[in-house]
Length: 592
Image (cartoon, rainbow, N blue to C red; front, side):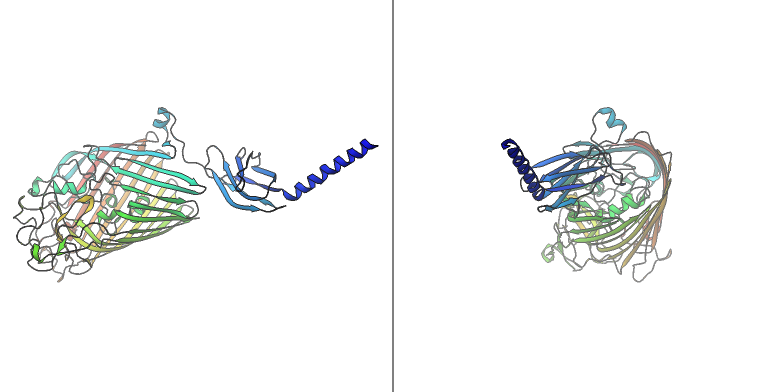
């Protein structure tokens, strides 16, 4: 009898304890799916009590379900992990006594895994990633022929496909960077707390034929003082021999609040150009890739911004971007006097700040973006300095196409060796671009309208330019009235059996008569301030032998007319040597 009483008492105690735990425990459950909504089995779901640090890991069943009961109340964090998918974390879950919660999780496919072998590296698109840090790059080189070209030099990174103001001879040449800039880069993304990561990127362009850093400014300075027929290729551009002449930036990225970065970065216009150009910015076949006027919102040097903040946010099908560049560098010494010297020249402050916005969206197979950019004190390098290499001589004509003030007054204020010469403007641009996929064809189109005015704050002799170069000649009053530039493009890409792309593109740039009075005619003599057009059409085929290695062949034809056919904007009668160029190119590319 006594034993029976003890047994009943023990059962009662256990039942009362179980009832008490049921009243104090909580439970979590849910379903884990992929981005299509399909259930994922064998997902490792870790439930961590933030208050105590205790964690429990369970696996989802065949229906993607997980459930954890008899948990102590408190704050919880749930993390789901599965090979081939990016980890997903849910935070901010608080449960009181007796509460239950259902937390469903959707997982996204992970980017390709890091390369595990040499064979995998050669035949797939796996990444060279170690602890979240990825090494990447490209090597692109070919051979070409130009109907009206110049000798190549080791600093020119844009090849020879576009009509050139000084081109005068047909020739075969090594063609660098045809579909893509040869170079190296390193980027990283490291999560420091759930949903938050540190990000960085550093990349540079290298000329495959010389091993030199891409340097547009050096192509001008090595031609300074030479006769025009002795020039090699001289260009203008944002890459000016910087150690990281493409980008170098760092910042913070949030899964919910977007990405904020600071440093040298591609402009919003450059980002849009790479997305909506049918040729993807290929130097050999794309005018808006070869010449960054469109990407830079008026000047090719502004396709990349130094000292810039950049913010990107994606919300469903909509994405937004904003960018701001802080003023930097020296503005040199300026005087508005018709004749001026070092004693009458006033030191200036840099006002080369810039800002821009991007708003875009995608719906099914259609996407579009609208980009606005404003850049103050934008510099356009005109041509190698003329005249003998002597500090006592003029290095440009004493008048430009509009302004009649002398550019030099007596002895040059700075040593002209290794310096550049250019026009300064304040630029504003609005671009609209769209893309539509109708398998196996992609259609592209875009339009940009650019306003250019004399700068509100002038630059002076000795002002700094890209890559640490200085200006020995500056034109702040080149525009007699507002200069208006229109750029439009269109094209299509046809993919044959997933490995071969056929791309056709057409580009046009137009400018207004901004000369006053508008005396632009054959008899009056065209100047660079007269209305004119530049056109380019291209067709090329690109075959991918593997994920990393492809070969290409194509042609580009470009020509100029009116004011855009004036080679040196200093008085009439200095036209292009030839107003057109025909450029077939063949080559290969390896990317990693």
